[in-house]
Length: 266
Image (cartoon, helix red, strand yellow):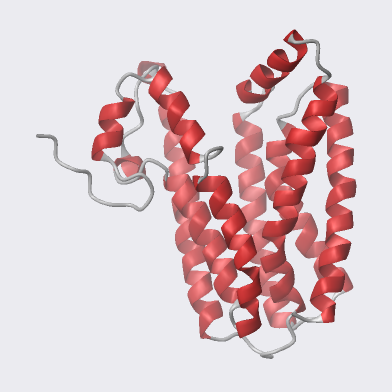
């Protein structure tokens, strides 16, 4: 772990904090916390451009991480922005209603439980990007980095195709109340989460061009917890079980994460 990495990581923490307070202020003004989700991808894009402007890493590795992050982040922001267009995400609307029905101050609650928490997660996850961009040795991309790009590519395919397939399915009124079990969703209940995991494993491998990159395992652990922990995959499946009667049968025959052939019904 170099002094440069620590310096840039601390500066990014300050940047993310300022951006989160600004985003929170905007959300209070427009009464819409959904912008936090849109900013998730864009926040990393801002972080890598900021890192590139204040650090002296290997140009080839900096450019690789910068553009991979930008492609991933902008695609995700556009998709979430399109999905949430026209009103606050129902999750935040329910949270707002719950807090306000008890006489609470939703603005303060959203600051603590949405924006500052997301800012902490964003900073922890971004450490793997910062490490790669401030790494001075080796001077060229190694085998781990090339394997990392392959994982990133697989992840982007799963995320992009999975989101596209789901949006088409949900856009058809004939599918109201039904479970999406076609395309990639036939092989895994969460192709977008699997894709996200591959993307960040790819970034981790790029950092592992230098064995010291093992410290960024904290980034991998953070994003995997967000995806697979009780507030990610678990919470989503609880809601699906309540909303869609066929979900339990789908759950029994379909892999929960890794893409696998569906189990045959007996």
